Image (cartoon, rainbow, N blue to C red; front, side, top):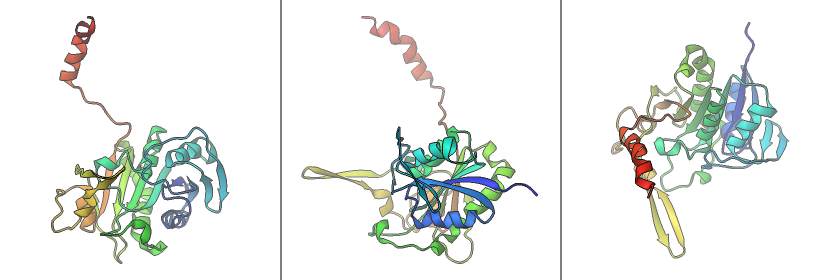
Length: 265
């Protein structure tokens, strides 16, 4: 009988959020789970890193007074055993599209793990909330059933199947739990970007207008994208790489060659 998997579990909503509790309880049924998560909500903080953070004992593990990236570095380098996989989530709210990959604390935790050469899964849940802040929506553990089901499945099977031979981390987005398991679709991040800003006196309000257009009947995102899959009720799993790759660029190479002569005077 093989030893149980070692999992480092973190998030960006904070260690007391319902989403991380839901994942902890399910993953702990068949794995050793070490929780190292922010003491407070650090949503949308990206890969912001601290040089020194306080750590507190918590009933789930360790509460770090810092960011998700802090938690992964602290967890992998100091606080926990070397894990087989890092899991980040479950985030209350979807993380969809290319533009969120560097913005989301949930995804950034997975990216941080990738730099340690540790496979990772970032799990988020789409919560339809037109005209309502996610902070005003109360969710129970049962609402995360779809998220815990697919994350547990991926933890159990993705490593052995060789998924991480070709992906550094998986960005998983799920619909709200609705009885039967949702279909699973391998997707790519949507390219839509509709950030906007409006000035009001001495303040500028930044608006993400993507969320204003999530009607499945009129959604402009093409088939195969993460956003379309989730809005239509499917689980979206995007296999992604880190660090980001660079492309050969002949035009830029030509500029490099002419640079010395251009600036010598």
